[in-house]
Amino acid sequence: MPATTETASFKFNHTMLRIKDPKASLHFYTEILGMTLIRESNMGDFTLYFLAYEGENLSPEEKNANVFARQGVLELTHNHGTESDPNFQGYSSGNTEPGKGFGHIAIGVANIEEACARFEKLGVSFKKRLTDGNMRHIAFILDPDRYWIEIVPHTLKV
Amino acid sequence: MPATTETASFKFNHTMLRIKDPKASLHFYTEILGMTLIRESNMGDFTLYFLAYEGENLSPEEKNANVFARQGVLELTHNHGTESDPNFQGYSSGNTEPGKGFGHIAIGVANIEEACARFEKLGVSFKKRLTDGNMRHIAFILDPDRYWIEIVPHTLKV
Image (cartoon, rainbow over all chains, first blue to last red; front, side):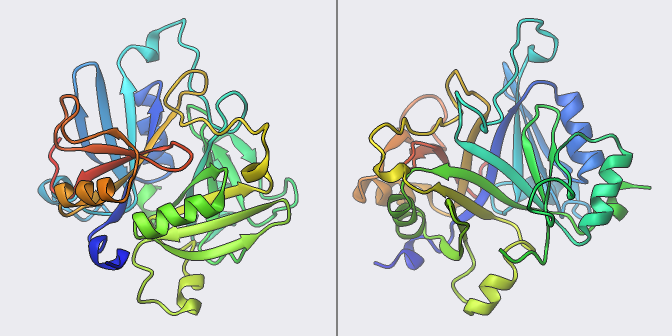
């Protein structure tokens, strides 16, 4: 049978990243990147935070109903205690050895110059500004755990 | 200014993972998971493969036009030569030390029993079957680089 029949319902639902401190990460992903917290699940030793765009106009019931039936969800996993543990070494960005594998998540934006100017104003850390390196049409910022976040114009051609 | 105004155009566009062998990964993500290759970009030393659902009904021009203006894209980066390098150690899944950070990507499905039965039939490696552990409503499979892929029902409540 073709993949299209048996996988017709499949959606690329979410990407999960571990975070050290939910206070810092929720501030970053909601206030700076503009995502909405669509579900928060305390699992005992850890808490899962589900964030996405296009949640603003949904009721709480609607946000909760479609968490796993949609695209574009970011799941942040907080193992309780890391935020205040002086021995916690932090997480790997996936971009250096040892631990290379995962690269980045990317946010598509309509106007990358305006988006980057706003990030500068908000004190966001950059991995690569628009003016750095050869690829002048994209930027990389760093989230509170120093995961790389590519900022890419909707109209990019590569 | 509220984040909603300045970030209104923002979309969670893609997640990037490095892969050892594009032949194995493209087979897995298209034939087994049912994604469509919407763009392939040879950058010299490396090639980028962009995959997504909902690309089946688009013309090649349409697929290419909206790669960075949509949600739910998976970007696979192949550094040329890893597929045949006997000294290549493979990439980290992000789930073990050293290198812990990234956790998994997740595919939402309408019928998880059918989806998992099909994966079994196709010889897919499982990290966690539905019947393993406490969380009987989700499964984890492994892609060719042994990245974890959560299989989650659209209707899951956590």
